[in-house]
Image 1: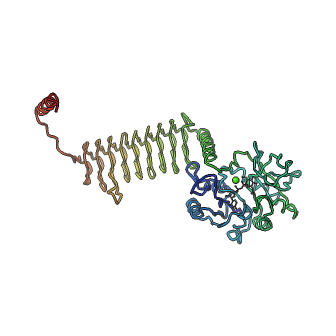
Image 2: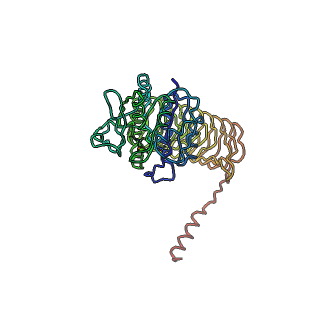
Image 3: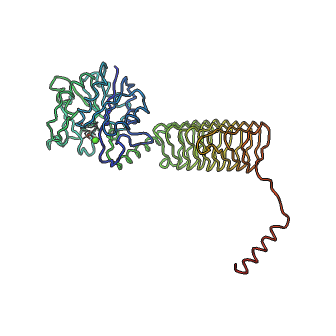
Length: 447
Ligand code: UD1
Ligand code: CA
């Protein structure tokens, strides 16, 4: 059965107190909206419709950056969740299959849960995701009759007896697409909030003789984010889960609570991660690597046996082959570093290629930026770059070449050559002694 996703993301999110639409606030380096899209991707959707309103341009950009094929439906006035779903009508024209409604601010729905909902659709016309709430608060209440879901009542409209129900509505709902659109078209707004409630479709469906049921999930999965405090709590839950998962996958975390993963971090088995390491988006670390304390990695690849840090920074485009060593206070950006090469201390390597087994001395800098353009530095294999070499790009150093410490290299260095580009040293005999005496005498006179 083909599935279409409808992700509701038009709300303003007043309590975030932000210029950024709520669904674009990030958890683990990705907007909440992208987390919702990733959750829905488990159903391999034939179409994805994002209902946007507040900050629709920004929402569209973020959604399309993750999946260029999504359709944006605009809800210019936020008249309620049923009204929001109705905006997907044009985008779903000609679609035959089930539609599943997700919220852009509910990032943690598990694939297994969505699969259970799809399975429940085999026996029921409408399936709602519910949970037993520890504190049901203002959630919509699911009113059951036997195994049938009879209706959903919003908190504002509920009687005391209904408010006592603890089975709550997550907001996730699925039905045949045409049926869902028919049902939302029948929803009115005569209620306490004056809104078109998506939740009303259950009562309408039942009155039409359709069946409805509830799939239950853990409350943590349906966690929605409405404020910055809830955002940080969601982040903490994500990290807790990611740390546990990494350890289950055979990664050693010396101090798990100090390591921060991104939504897409991939770490191989038997890699060791020391305390206080932060992963930005787009990082893959292969097996048997060592990420030492206080390192920051983003958009990079570390192959088997790499040793990174302590205090290293790998920025986007850092491609490290097997057994590469990157030491303390080294920054690598957009650079390919071949097998066994070492950049051990206090260096900046940007827009560069470094050949196998080359040794880059302390304080080496690829001067890649001329103030307007970026330029490339190419270093061959088996080279020895002396400490504090400035490589003024574009420039290349051939295989097995060397540079003298403190050199400013502005011309290509042929293979096997030694480049020395610095002022020649001159020693002036006895000069230091005479200079010291002169200075001390001046100090004694008090001038
Ligand atoms: C909704 C449910 C409630 C459920 C709760 C779970 C309804 C009427 N109520 O309440 O039963 O327990 O979620 O969190 O559905 N949105 C739009 N356009 C709109 C209105 C909302 O896109 O016109 C989006 C919001 O941006 C948000 C989502 O829909 O992502 C939910 O809307 P919200 O107003 O937060 O619903 P609740 O009142 O929390
Ligand atoms: Ca809400």
